[in-house]
Amino acid sequence: MKIRVLFQIAFAFLCLAALGCDAGVDGRYPISGTVQFGGEPLSNGQISFQPTGGGTALSSSAAQVIKGKFEIPASKGLVPGEYSVVLIAEEPSGQKLQGSDGEGGTFEYDEMVSYVPEDWGRLSKQKVTIEPKKNVFDFDVPRADAPVAEPEATGRPGGGA
Image (cartoon, rainbow, N blue to C red; front, side, top):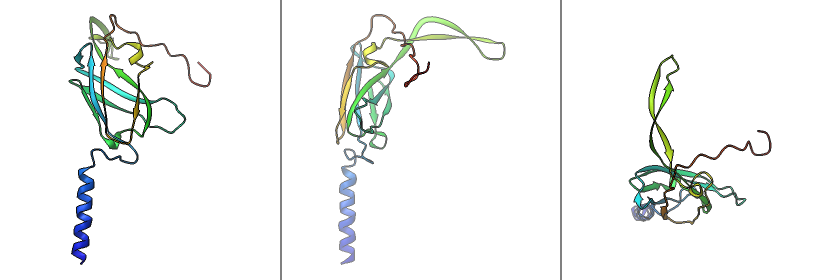
């Protein structure tokens, strides 16, 4: 009888493990998808999901985008709710800059610029809703015509500069 109960428990565990890709971990759920940038898969960048401030204690998470694909496992996923989508992607501008090595020497490096439109960058207006399941999103981000400057810091929340 004991062997039968152990077999049933093991079978139930295996069934749950097989469903694990869609199951939440500590209330978090996996996110994956693709990012097209200017009509092509984004070769390299970062995508993050930030809580919109809807009054609940939501999480945030990020992933590297490589060859147009990203994946966040449930263990680092998001709790259900609404999130802003923020994309970071830089590329060389063609200009060289000079840097200091801190010991009196200098070096040359490529200036990096972003062509991610402001409404997809740090001031993103893009929203997604995470649901209690595996969440798959495919984003088609337009490429800005000119490099987009980072917004200036406006001081700390709650006052002070």
